[in-house]
Image (cartoon, rainbow, N blue to C red):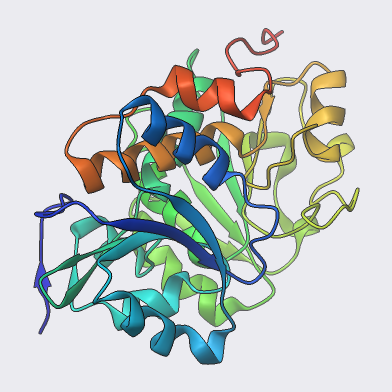
Length: 291
């Protein structure tokens, strides 16, 4: 049985990477390197494209160089299986997006929960009115469900998970606690009672204007949170804002999970201002007022 540890590295990594397939468009190196330079740290954060079959070998080779970093799709659940030690957040989500080394032991953590929590708090700052509908049942959805279960804004809300893979979704439901149910189709959700909709699927990720849920389904005061991020915003979020809905894509989540990871690696928080300046995109602050 592996040890559950605190989310703090004993020794700071000598190098940092983001692993995934693909990672060419990841913005993590942009804001992490800016934060590292601002703090005067001689550490570089790079991209590392890794096929699923090569993940174990690639991670093993990082041990001697004391390389830590982040993991993105599709490796979060596989990284959880590789970790010798995990944090409570990783155990709850069964997924790892942040890692470092404790001696020769790989430590896995999940800071996606921090990123989701920050975005939900911003979107629902005036309170949540209705159900929460989560689209997807992968590692990202797991972080969403854990964050929802921990947030005082959504802890008592009914959570509906929409996934075509019912068995996978049912495993995630145990993470949420409270009143949680699984739905097979988007059309099955009671949209007239939805107060928050979270897209945890890849819809809209690859230069696509695909929308996970037609906005015509939603009430005028439903908040929209798309975990997919693009510099210009996803089509779904742009349309939601045009309709006057409080809406965000995954940029706040990206920066907040990255800031939480940086704090784990180095024992102190980075400058979020520097991170946002490096991205050169508007920093989300205000949302459309609820009618």
